[in-house]
Image (tube, rainbow, N blue to C red):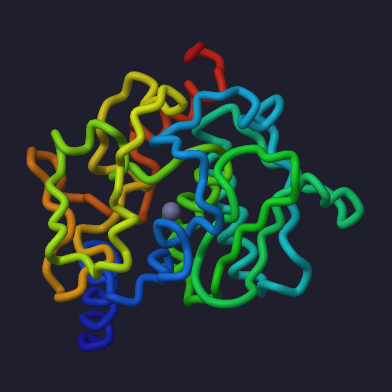
Length: 251
Ligand SMILES: [Zn+2]
């Protein structure tokens, strides 16, 4: 019992703070690891209302037979966490109504989203099956993919990031340099006045795409203890989502 507890604790710690190299969010064949199509280069939060889900409502389908009961429940739990912390609503729709819906499925490797924000087409979120609490089934990983769908980019490419993190280019596998580039200075993105957030569920882990086990992202300020966490929406994640969707009290 003792060793089982230890093993579980170790696994837990490894998942949270020192994710294994094979992080399913960090797949090499996707832009920034988990976005299928290179997005309009928005940085952190999409400002353009056209790309926000109308009325803050996301029609969705969890693909039939893709998940067993426990995984199905975990997806619903992630949806509930977003709903309980904002005015965004996920509305289940029928198979016939799927053309503009988010289809959550498990078809192939990794956890990833097709596009950022509302695109007036069917959106796919893929979640590879892992034990609950691991890989794509860490609650924060499911929330992370759904926040991409709602219109959020990775935190580490925000255009003020160089004041908060130092990118260690020498430690990045060169073919993945693109995942760390932030040359975009357009006004299409916004942090909604919340500032940089080490604790964001949209932040990369310190060793994302490392070629040598050394950090690729080094925080420059205090408060980065939970950088890369996939357990919860940070307070800023919650406020940014509420501001993006003009939720009551945030307008
Ligand atoms: Zn992502």
